[in-house]
Image (cartoon, rainbow, N blue to C red; front, side):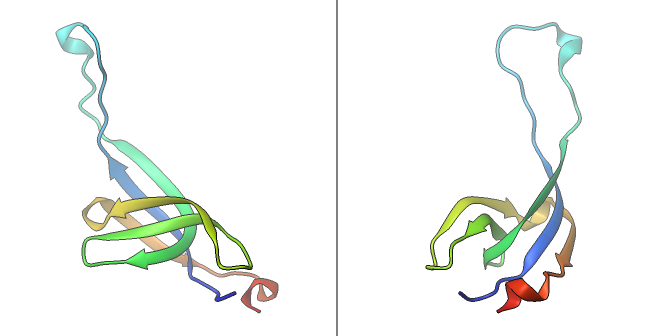
Length: 84
């Protein structure tokens, strides 16, 4: 199994509601998000993190975050046992 970077990422996301509501009920704030995961891939526009990697190379639970939404990104050191 190839070891991948493990990242801590803070990012912002849009929010919204559906259905009828009072005009003053709209929340103008964005969602402050935190994600932890293995870096699966990266492009000029986005990164994709995955929650789980199997020793056979398969992965599960991915999420793609646009780079413009990222406010903090930090590599998290992995224990030596996971680097083999």
